[in-house]
Image (tube, rainbow over all chains, first blue to last red; front, side):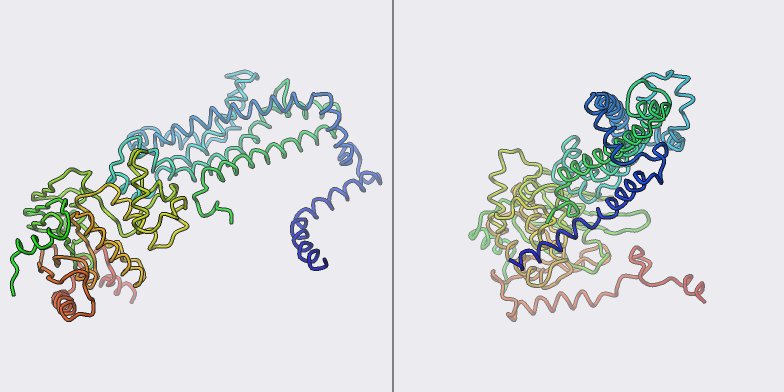
Length: 263
Length: 274
């Protein structure tokens, strides 16, 4: 009996160790808030944040905002990422398209999307189109660049082998070029999923009637610091969720890759 | 004792079915920029023949194989293979398996699903039927080359080109692979052209050994030993010694010619260092 506990106990400790610091910090925070060292306007106690979360969740308000934000993020990602993928595939595959487009894309890439906010407001006003445009633009470049790079770095020996085994056109693309570029494309997807939230937060805090950004900005005006914290935590959770999604894609699509083989 | 080439091929024809392709080269040359890698090569290879091409690195033997495979075009001369591009398959030094396809899918590359059974049969023949669901990264170097060989043979080629396929393998795996290639060649009757830097391998496998030196055929020698060949036999050693001696006789290729090797530091570098 004693051997069993002694073998599983270090294992358990190993798993819990990374969480000890965050837990300790939260406990300290709670104690500090209860003792009155921290003003609830600066930083409300964790339990109060949890309570605010619960109230918002029960009333359904929280889910409405989350749904709207997620919709914006995902449709922006679909548009920007889709265009980035298509254009990256085109410039990576055809030298002529690259000569035509790549210089332009590289030039635009160096403009931070957030620097365009004044212009975007002038163009689209402050409605949905502006937010969609900003998210799409931010997501576009990481996907574009990594797709282009991925196509270019496919092992030339494998392409030569494919040709000598009779693969042409679409078959060559499907069996060799696309799978060879996939690891790099997924790096771009993962990067842009993170960037997607950054852009959306800024876009939503500027102007919105719905969404997590609106919820926090609104709460700030009424000095509801607990709701502001709920919003920040929601972004953290959604960011983690997006990362999890990207990792799952990698595990499914790159299972052939020695780096992703679980042992 | 003297065998005419005709008699020789008749003896083999009695042993096995020959459905290999004949290969004919007339005045073949290849130039890369200023460098003439191959010049004026005339060659006739009979259906079902096993030819080994040996020579020092940079002599042009791999270039010749690439021309035969249609991977590069000759700069001059005429090359005829009595068959279509589908009858020719090449096996590279690095196995060039697709890492994102399982073993069975690598072997059936370019085949319609109906031919998957054939892929399985060939895998069984090379002794790797139990690894068909594995990823290439899970295999050893020798296993990968056996998969690459299956991938070539599943198309029933009439001309199989082998570009130093065993160069990176350990001695024991190498001999096993040589035996496997020989027996498959005897069963299927294709024409085989093997580029190798290993003279013993050439004598063990080939009906005929060609030595390429400085872009031209310097020696064309029929190996008249019965199969399976005994490496320890006197006849074997005699052939091996003769070819090796001929290879060593020739001066090494000058650094200026084999400039892509660039192992000898140039004079400019030395003076710079002082």
